[in-house]
View 1 (tube, rainbow, N blue to C red):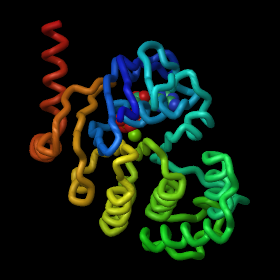
View 2: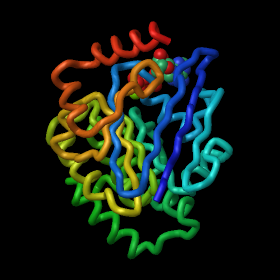
View 3: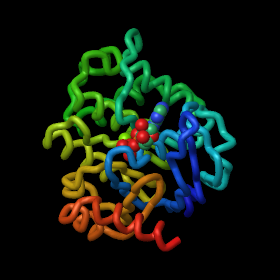
Length: 253
Ligand SMILES: Nc1ncnc2c1ncn2[C@@H]1O[C@H](COP(=O)(O)OP(=O)(O)O)[C@@H](O)[C@H]1O
Ligand SMILES: [Mg+2]
């Protein structure tokens, strides 16, 4: 089943072109990885899909589960099953992790989860992520280490059970053990009923997560798509070769 179809998506921020025609289709059961150099537009793609107000869509279309995603408000996108794990999670003093996730679950599912059931589920998820139960009573991300913030994002993903989870550089700022736990958990959360889009510029995550497709994003465009061997090519030669390919295409055009 098709989860999302992105066609010729273009965007601007502060009048500057960032996304320059993204085409990407993701079906259920698939894991896609987008790699690319800093400033390529990877976070922008995630933010545009989630409806971040700083980004203006100037062209293209996005169909999400058959609906026009670009026409939906941010909360409607979340309720429809879109989840974004942020590159830089925000601290929210005064709101505990437990309260936040339970409320988010209610907003997304339409019903307040039963306390006993919810507690059981969230404690199981915490243990999968090697997180202590005491996190539930702490204020969201306040004083969390980089690794704890990212694990907390995956905790939300696990409980909210989205149709499409976009993970934006969930590896950044994490030590290798946290990276392993995070991506092994993400791999376990992958199923026939959902899809996962992992944004990274870190090859090592591919030891823990097995994508069906790898895409290279350079200067607002997907310049190459392939399988895992494409990530190996990047590991060997970096992004310069893709930048060069793009330039020569532009010259030919
Ligand atoms: N909210 C914003 N305001 C101004 N510029 C932005 C904003 N978001 C992204 N950009 C710019 O868009 C470009 C792409 O950024 P980004 O999508 O974060 O790249 P990546 O995630 O691939 O490193 C950069 O030049 C960045 O400065
Ligand atoms: Mg980014």
